[in-house]
Length: 289
Image (tube, rainbow, N blue to C red):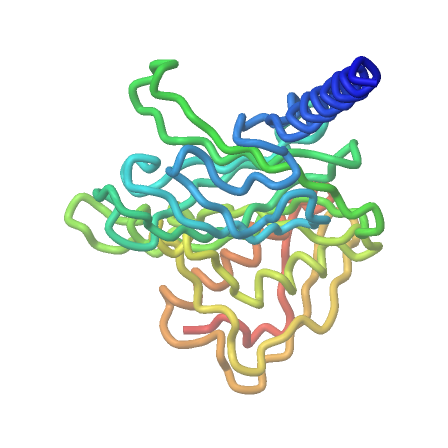
């Protein structure tokens, strides 16, 4: 009887040991976790250096993607670090510097926020990479946080366009006088849905006058939107694009420099389209000093 009891105890010990080993295997960090911090579906921080609140792991995303979080000062260099988005094949779809929203020369956490615009993916899944600034280029100083994401398969097809804004710092003579020339025009990338009216859609987006915080920090500016000013028609014939506007409040006047820059912004934005060789405006009272 004692032998039988001993055998039962040994069997129970063996079963318990096997169960413990399996449970330990299930709680070890997943081999698929690119950050080495546990399950790749849950990681939103790395080495007590960076924490990300947006995007969340496996979030379904579209462009532009809001990127938010906080990082310790050593993650930045000159108040920024790179945020990249890759598809499942490793192809880079977009990149933008994330700017520190506060004093970055600290060991404390500093918030960051930006909008990451990216081109159309060819895969269903991808990765957002938060890349530690590494001005030395030394491998031992490199670090990154990777967050898996999913692309919205139902999102409408997009195309990249450029909007032309103005930076007065790029348009000065040797004495610092503003030249009011197209040397100050700066192209910023945007995405628009693929439609039958890409030129009108792009001009209308320019007239909305929306700039990102990063673009404003670079000195880029615009006086759009203008009160009551709107695009009412577009006609392309033999390479000449005629744009019609309604300007009930004479918002496009106010000095030759201002009027000229407003005019150049629309012209250069329209000329990015290969089929447009020349741009004309109606009525003729537009953009007068």
